[in-house]
Length: 364
Image (cartoon, rainbow, N blue to C red; front, side):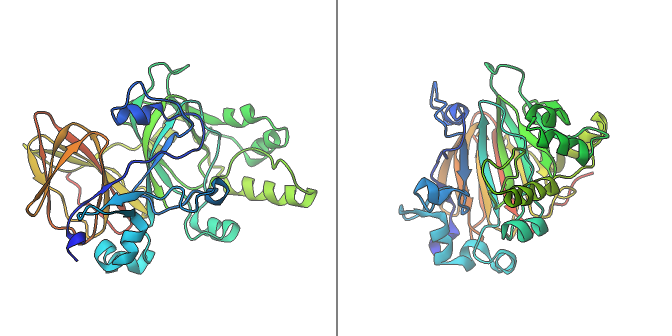
């Protein structure tokens, strides 16, 4: 079908969650922007928020797209209409008619709660989910008016035991639980891999792109507010059993979880770097493509989601040409024709995000 041979522009959204949202506005050219309690944008998502029904919108979290004929539909509807063309058979053998990964923009006005996420096996047993929630972060910018320099909490400190963490949990001492973790200052361009079970929290002032498994499961660090003693005990065991107690010293913690970029290709046209992928997870990957002149996108054999991080340029597909500007969001169907990106007067930078099944040959 011809509709699937061209890229689909994604409709920008913002999701109601916690304090924040201003930096998403500013990224999109809306000034001064507003902290309106909509701090996340779910980009190209066919995943629903865990509390969608309570919000009164069964499709909360799902992105819409504009098809080449100008019609507007939910992305999952467009995929389900012709999954072979949208996703490809290799992808469908693993994920059925789902994307199998999730891309977000996230703006934390204040520090988010300490948490971790389950492995796939743990999620299947305790949450009846086919997906766990490994995730990754790429720092896009930092708030200049944040109450302290932006940071993330990430990984237990060396020597922290479950018994120590459990004692703080039983006491309801969130601060003591946070003190068990490393507090890591962030810089623009930093990338972090947050594996299943890793304690973490996005600190105040961080605006980042997040690529993760297609799940909205979060295991926090707080007690169940209501419940029988038996329910409280089951909740506590499920929570504490999800965390991974393999702390490390400062240097080892950064070596494990702050990931340096690796070169995929480069030339006079620009460069492409693998940010997260091989070496971290089998469930998703993404690259940073910086184009100074003109280049064709690598064929991945899978659908792809793109975010324009900065700059201006054009995206060409067959006889069609589309403008590229900062904050644009795109979905590239599996059957999409060859794509070419050309920079305007300054480089154009994209994040190219992939589901499982995509690998890159790295330059030495």
